Image (spheres, rainbow, N blue to C red):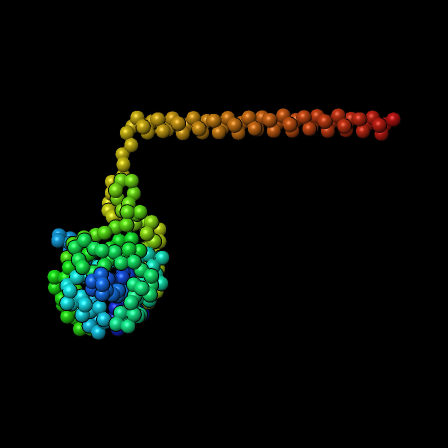
Length: 243
């Protein structure tokens, strides 16, 4: 198989595309970020990478707080708009008609329209060149209750989350597996249940076969009746010709 070779670049897709809110309830901003992810379990840690010249960079650097707001299909326009406009000139919450919601552990607002908001406190800032990586501890996860099912679990399939890939936005598609399914042991059905199932299937099969046989008998009788009628008609025709 042949491959095309390109120079090193940022070609790692798909990526989560999120709206990061920062600042305070009174003076806040939103920056769209695709370079984000989880980096640790205990304590739960994540990161965002932000260009140094972005308006939100200094806000996050000074406050040491931000909120990652997951984005959905309904938010795709606002997500893109907040990524190309600067908060130095426009109020993104106002322009995109987004609602500020008070967080529990940080001063910056959540975006109410987002299905999930992740409150973060910066623990370390690493300068990497074009971007600074803000490494943060996740201090709270705020989920919209309309996505919580009867068991109390978060049903992510109802969110229509979007992802970013090579300059385009995509809605996440259908589920094709789950974690660990490749090594999951198949359920062993007890022998009694297997026998019951087999017996049920056998009865269904016998019933279907009986129906087919009955239909075949009816068809045979109809065919015989038609032949008799044809024979009678032929005999009458012969007598008529003889006379």
